[in-house]
Length: 184
Image (cartoon, rainbow, N blue to C red; front, side, top):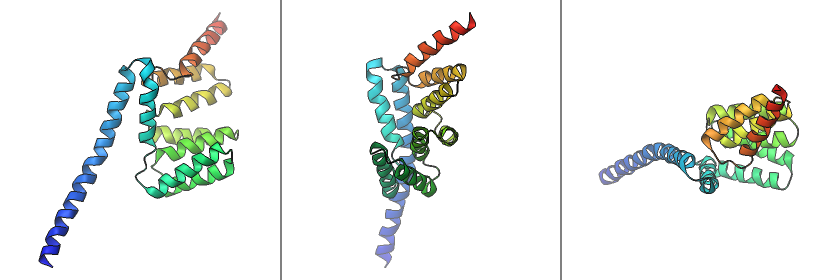
Protein backbone atom coordinates (compact mmCIF):
# COMPACT_ATOMS: atom_id res chain seq x y z
CA UNK A 1 0.00 0.00 0.00
CA UNK A 2 2.87 2.36 0.80
CA UNK A 3 4.35 1.98 -2.70
CA UNK A 4 0.92 2.46 -4.33
CA UNK A 5 0.27 5.60 -2.29
CA UNK A 6 3.72 6.93 -3.22
CA UNK A 7 3.06 6.43 -6.97
CA UNK A 8 -0.41 7.92 -6.61
CA UNK A 9 1.09 11.15 -5.23
CA UNK A 10 3.40 11.38 -8.26
CA UNK A 11 0.50 10.80 -10.64
CA UNK A 12 -1.65 13.45 -8.94
CA UNK A 13 1.25 15.91 -8.92
CA UNK A 14 1.94 15.29 -12.62
CA UNK A 15 -1.74 15.76 -13.44
CA UNK A 16 -1.97 19.01 -11.49
CA UNK A 17 1.18 20.34 -13.12
CA UNK A 18 -0.01 19.34 -16.58
CA UNK A 19 -3.47 20.85 -16.20
CA UNK A 20 -2.16 23.89 -14.38
CA UNK A 21 0.34 24.65 -17.11
CA UNK A 22 -1.83 23.79 -20.11
CA UNK A 23 -4.53 26.37 -19.42
CA UNK A 24 -2.21 29.41 -19.53
CA UNK A 25 -0.39 27.85 -22.46
CA UNK A 26 -3.62 27.87 -24.50
CA UNK A 27 -4.16 31.55 -23.67
CA UNK A 28 -0.53 32.28 -24.53
CA UNK A 29 -0.92 30.40 -27.82
CA UNK A 30 -4.02 32.44 -28.64
CA UNK A 31 -2.20 35.66 -27.74
CA UNK A 32 0.61 34.65 -30.11
CA UNK A 33 -1.86 33.82 -32.86
CA UNK A 34 -3.64 37.16 -32.45
CA UNK A 35 -0.32 38.97 -32.55
CA UNK A 36 0.64 37.03 -35.67
CA UNK A 37 -2.77 37.79 -37.21
CA UNK A 38 -2.24 41.54 -36.81
CA UNK A 39 1.33 41.58 -38.08
CA UNK A 40 1.20 39.08 -40.94
CA UNK A 41 0.64 39.95 -44.59
CA UNK A 42 -3.00 39.87 -45.76
CA UNK A 43 -2.55 36.64 -47.72
CA UNK A 44 -1.57 34.78 -44.50
CA UNK A 45 -4.31 36.10 -42.25
CA UNK A 46 -7.12 33.71 -43.23
CA UNK A 47 -4.91 30.74 -42.33
CA UNK A 48 -4.08 32.26 -38.94
CA UNK A 49 -7.72 33.19 -38.31
CA UNK A 50 -8.64 29.55 -38.98
CA UNK A 51 -6.13 28.43 -36.34
CA UNK A 52 -7.72 30.85 -33.86
CA UNK A 53 -11.22 29.57 -34.71
CA UNK A 54 -9.99 26.01 -34.23
CA UNK A 55 -8.70 26.93 -30.77
CA UNK A 56 -12.02 28.57 -29.87
CA UNK A 57 -13.82 25.34 -30.71
CA UNK A 58 -11.76 23.23 -28.30
CA UNK A 59 -13.95 22.68 -25.27
CA UNK A 60 -11.76 20.15 -23.49
CA UNK A 61 -14.74 17.79 -23.21
CA UNK A 62 -15.64 15.00 -25.61
CA UNK A 63 -19.37 15.39 -24.90
CA UNK A 64 -19.27 19.16 -25.52
CA UNK A 65 -17.26 18.65 -28.69
CA UNK A 66 -19.90 16.16 -29.84
CA UNK A 67 -22.72 18.65 -29.20
CA UNK A 68 -20.81 21.34 -31.10
CA UNK A 69 -20.11 19.02 -34.03
CA UNK A 70 -23.73 17.82 -34.20
CA UNK A 71 -24.99 21.38 -34.03
CA UNK A 72 -22.70 22.47 -36.85
CA UNK A 73 -23.80 19.46 -38.93
CA UNK A 74 -27.44 20.42 -38.33
CA UNK A 75 -26.67 23.96 -39.54
CA UNK A 76 -25.08 22.52 -42.70
CA UNK A 77 -28.22 20.41 -43.20
CA UNK A 78 -30.36 23.52 -42.56
CA UNK A 79 -32.07 21.71 -39.67
CA UNK A 80 -32.13 24.80 -37.50
CA UNK A 81 -34.41 23.35 -34.81
CA UNK A 82 -31.96 20.51 -34.19
CA UNK A 83 -29.04 22.97 -34.30
CA UNK A 84 -30.71 25.15 -31.66
CA UNK A 85 -31.28 22.09 -29.49
CA UNK A 86 -27.61 21.06 -29.73
CA UNK A 87 -26.21 24.54 -29.10
CA UNK A 88 -28.65 25.21 -26.25
CA UNK A 89 -27.65 21.89 -24.65
CA UNK A 90 -24.00 22.86 -25.10
CA UNK A 91 -24.62 26.17 -23.31
CA UNK A 92 -26.63 24.45 -20.57
CA UNK A 93 -23.79 21.99 -19.95
CA UNK A 94 -21.05 24.63 -20.01
CA UNK A 95 -22.22 28.26 -19.96
CA UNK A 96 -18.58 29.41 -20.04
CA UNK A 97 -17.83 27.79 -23.41
CA UNK A 98 -18.16 30.81 -25.70
CA UNK A 99 -18.52 28.93 -29.00
CA UNK A 100 -21.94 27.66 -27.97
CA UNK A 101 -23.18 31.25 -27.95
CA UNK A 102 -21.45 32.00 -31.25
CA UNK A 103 -23.11 29.14 -33.06
CA UNK A 104 -26.51 29.59 -31.44
CA UNK A 105 -26.40 33.29 -32.39
CA UNK A 106 -25.73 32.23 -35.97
CA UNK A 107 -28.79 29.98 -35.98
CA UNK A 108 -30.97 32.66 -34.39
CA UNK A 109 -29.81 35.09 -37.08
CA UNK A 110 -30.56 32.60 -39.84
CA UNK A 111 -34.06 32.20 -38.38
CA UNK A 112 -34.57 35.98 -38.36
CA UNK A 113 -34.53 36.12 -34.55
CA UNK A 114 -32.46 39.29 -34.14
CA UNK A 115 -33.03 39.83 -30.42
CA UNK A 116 -31.85 36.39 -29.29
CA UNK A 117 -28.96 36.55 -31.79
CA UNK A 118 -27.78 39.87 -30.36
CA UNK A 119 -28.16 38.58 -26.81
CA UNK A 120 -25.99 35.54 -27.56
CA UNK A 121 -23.44 37.73 -29.38
CA UNK A 122 -23.28 40.01 -26.34
CA UNK A 123 -22.60 37.02 -24.09
CA UNK A 124 -20.04 35.68 -26.57
CA UNK A 125 -18.15 38.97 -26.64
CA UNK A 126 -18.14 39.25 -22.85
CA UNK A 127 -16.56 35.79 -22.69
CA UNK A 128 -14.33 36.22 -25.76
CA UNK A 129 -13.78 39.95 -26.46
CA UNK A 130 -11.53 39.35 -29.48
CA UNK A 131 -14.03 37.08 -31.22
CA UNK A 132 -13.85 38.74 -34.62
CA UNK A 133 -16.59 36.54 -36.13
CA UNK A 134 -18.98 37.49 -33.35
CA UNK A 135 -18.09 41.14 -33.75
CA UNK A 136 -18.74 40.89 -37.48
CA UNK A 137 -22.12 39.35 -36.68
CA UNK A 138 -22.98 42.37 -34.55
CA UNK A 139 -22.00 44.63 -37.45
CA UNK A 140 -24.18 42.71 -39.89
CA UNK A 141 -27.16 42.91 -37.55
CA UNK A 142 -26.62 46.63 -36.95
CA UNK A 143 -26.65 47.18 -40.71
CA UNK A 144 -29.90 45.24 -41.00
CA UNK A 145 -31.37 47.37 -38.24
CA UNK A 146 -30.56 50.51 -40.24
CA UNK A 147 -27.71 51.65 -38.02
CA UNK A 148 -24.83 52.01 -40.52
CA UNK A 149 -22.73 54.35 -38.36
CA UNK A 150 -22.77 51.86 -35.48
CA UNK A 151 -22.04 48.98 -37.87
CA UNK A 152 -19.10 50.91 -39.29
CA UNK A 153 -17.70 51.43 -35.80
CA UNK A 154 -17.96 47.70 -35.07
CA UNK A 155 -16.37 46.76 -38.41
CA UNK A 156 -13.47 49.11 -37.73
CA UNK A 157 -12.96 47.41 -34.37
CA UNK A 158 -12.95 44.03 -36.14
CA UNK A 159 -10.20 45.24 -38.48
CA UNK A 160 -8.09 46.23 -35.46
CA UNK A 161 -8.04 42.53 -34.57
CA UNK A 162 -8.14 40.93 -38.04
CA UNK A 163 -6.99 43.53 -40.60
CA UNK A 164 -7.69 41.49 -43.75
CA UNK A 165 -11.01 39.92 -42.70
CA UNK A 166 -12.71 39.10 -45.98
CA UNK A 167 -15.91 41.06 -46.38
CA UNK A 168 -15.25 43.42 -43.48
CA UNK A 169 -12.81 45.69 -45.30
CA UNK A 170 -15.35 45.92 -48.13
CA UNK A 171 -18.15 46.68 -45.65
CA UNK A 172 -16.05 49.49 -44.14
CA UNK A 173 -15.41 51.01 -47.56
CA UNK A 174 -19.08 50.69 -48.55
CA UNK A 175 -20.37 52.21 -45.31
CA UNK A 176 -17.83 55.02 -45.37
CA UNK A 177 -19.06 55.97 -48.85
CA UNK A 178 -22.68 55.64 -47.79
CA UNK A 179 -22.24 57.74 -44.68
CA UNK A 180 -20.07 60.30 -46.49
CA UNK A 181 -22.90 60.71 -49.00
CA UNK A 182 -25.37 61.30 -46.18
CA UNK A 183 -23.18 63.98 -44.64
CA UNK A 184 -23.15 66.08 -47.83
